[in-house]
Image 1 (tube, helix red, strand yellow):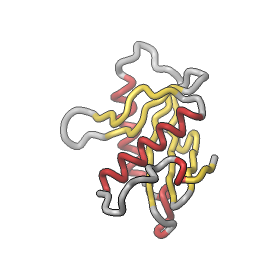
Image 2 (cartoon, helix red, strand yellow; image 1 turned 45 degrees about the horizontal axis):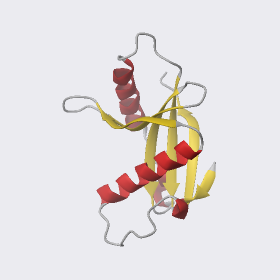
Image 3 (cartoon, one colour; image 1 turned 120 degrees about the horizontal axis):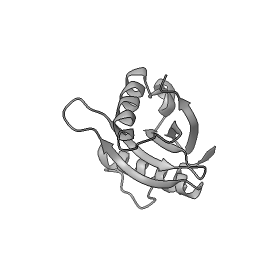
Image 4 (cartoon, rainbow, N blue to C red; image 1 turned 135 degrees about the vertical axis):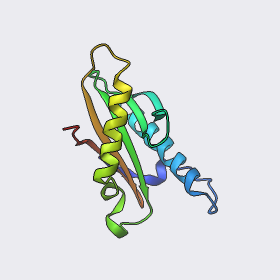
Length: 134
């Protein structure tokens, strides 16, 4: 599902923003976008303890009860393949490892999926079930 990036990123932001502040704004925008689509935010910036762990940008609950682990990627251009192409095999494996850590809190794991929200130039692209844990 595509949508204009301008409607989600802060229009009053200056041009001297840091990479971290741009990433935080992208994650906040993606969260608002997904909530507008009916998902409920459970957690953000979930990290595993210790060094060498992983992070999941957003953990959300879909209306059908599915637990959704969301990776948010921001790119200002399509150079080098854009936002979605930047979710490499190594990144996917770290997200999966971190999701397994998160799921330890449940006696019975709920249905889960891995989504990616790519913010490319002026578009928001939400890929549901972007990859599997297999």
